[in-house]
Length: 396
Image (cartoon, rainbow, N blue to C red):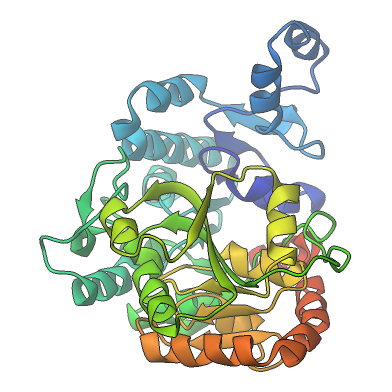
């Protein structure tokens, strides 16, 4: 049994279990049963935007008979975004009850696991946690160090409202989930370290790095058009992503014939962006993965200066496109990057380290271009198939 909201990780976790013949059911808010003839026939009369939205809530290799949906919860969170944490708890509780009734084990994502494991109770069956963030204790340390109680991170609340950085994230039971599980799966060594530091036994935590779609994210043909040296950042335009440090470094660099491209997704920090206005170009909400792949491939380096990212998918996507990366120690960069070969790893909050690394990239274009092949080779070791096989090995 597994549980999550939305189309988490492109349904790779239930796919892994299904391929191994281990999936009892996925419990989620909505999954489009396009493999059912009647539903598919009715959908043919729906507007294109509806068909596209529903198509994103399924995977061709995951039959709907293996999915239990709670569609009312999907409606509820759409109407009342502030109920998201309650919706997650209800999904988790339903998964735990179903696992108990069927005598099945339970692989639960963070945010759902507390309710799921509690509902499972003392019933037999493995309890596996997929830890999708650093342990809350580590997150609070990072953000308390980062901000005064009056500093806010726009959009970090479930309802999109500002919330003090030092209080992000707080959910009932989130810190307890790793101790309720028999074993934990972490997407990076960074996350594993935060769990061990919180008191989880090291032998109970396995690292399974995420995968990437190597067909969509791939190196494009070299452009014959001369363009400025380009650094790309992709993600929410927020301080918890370390964006302020990248902007500060870029301002000090003042490089001629160079561009900082911010690909914004979701919430953004208006005051922060206004403070550095004129130093960057923003492209917002690039939803098509092929379009994002072109942006990576046409950039010289991808920088993710995040204060805390359990993995940082943009790093692996950029590597798959042959683009060297700069990531912090609080991401999957230490797992993905061989410094000087396919990218660089820097400490968090270190403007000087960012400045030195970006300067090297700018001043050594031939060496940076030579790193592109190594970047792609590293990404090829991280297919989604490899992720699924490694995940199943942890569950067995």
